[in-house]
Image (spheres, rainbow, N blue to C red):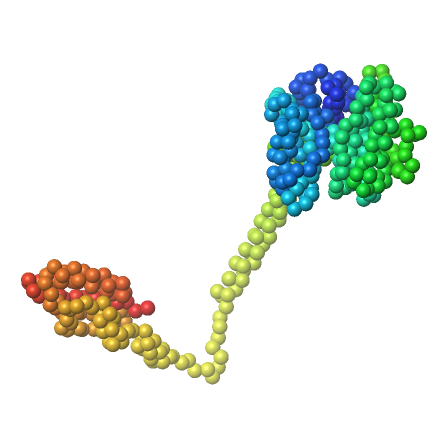
Amino acid sequence: MTANNRTYIVELNGALVQLAADRLLPVTDLQATGGKSPFWVITDFQESVTQIMTVDTPPKYADVMVKKRLQESGEFDGPVTVIPLWKQKAGRNATTMLFTAMPAAVYTHYMENVVSNQACNVLFFPVYRLLMAMLSKVKDESPAAVVFQHDRFADVIVGSRGKIYYADRFVAFDAEADQINGLWQTVINDLSTIEANHRIHIESIIPLAWVDGMLLPPGLAPEGKTVISLETREVFAGEDRHETAFFNAVDGLHAWDSVSPLFEIMAWYARQTAPVASCAMVAAAVILLVAGFLLADRSDALQQHAMQLADQIDNAVIDQPAGVRAETFTETLAFIQDLDYCHTVPSYRAIVNALSDVSFPGLEFESLNLDYARTGLKITLAGRIAVPFDAAHSSYKQFLLDLEKKGFRITDSRFNTTIDISDFLLTLEKAFP
């Protein structure tokens, strides 16, 4: 476990090691590294390739087009999984993308088989994600090159904080010193070609080496370029002592740099924040408890004061000032109420108009009696329908429905009929607003 609460496992060229304090311990199988603590795996992903490619499609579909190109080129025999590391629009309908690609079966092994056999969450970081993180920490906005040398390989990335120009892996015949010197010379020569192709000037080179690697030999450092030396850390592999800046660089990674599924990243953050969240909840509970006691005391005091004021009000005697004569306004109030009543009740004309609105052919009103009361209006209506029975009865039922829609309440309805003519008597009520 490192000082920042991380357990690191490094997989390079098929070899697995775990950092425990300052010692590198060999690991036989990634599935056998179980435990209760989460760990971070920095890996070059076996059988994978990392490239930068421009495809004629918007960024949203760049992954699919890259996968199609790789399958058409025959670089992989079967299904391919593409992990995008960086994307940028390269025109109206083109995208430049840095990616790591591998057989789908290999990706499944890492993301499903390994994770499913762990009691804790696992975060995977491609080597090139680490190199990108190192680029983002360069203070100068000018392009820089990060070269990671391990075994007989050199992983190179050229870019700045917001743009990647080049990414590739260089390979030597073996890991002998003269071959690694030649590998570094090839990398330095290729940087000049990259500058010419992209019309840029690489201001600085950041060499990084694994415990079995070699930093940039002093005699090969190109003129006009700054070689940035990184702070190293002492680690032991067996009885051998090594100085490497690799783990200091890995300390600069964040969980969101991982290419693991989102739920794994969220689980890691949940583990990190759980102690803080628990302390915050306990503190909040204590604060609420204390505040509850204080508010309860304050509430009791306010209630006691309110009761005292109520007693004072009840016991207060309001004397009528001398010389003031008591007045009653009963008649005035009655007059105002009568005015309001006359204003509120519907007029005789309004009632007649309302009844006329719902009349129908053949309907004749014979008598209309209105009885005004304080709470409402009582109406007695009589009439005849001079149409045959079948039409008279249906029209009368519709007439009753229309009256109810007008706000009349039917309290009594009588309907008598002969073959050619019908009589009715209605008693209605209408409440005042």
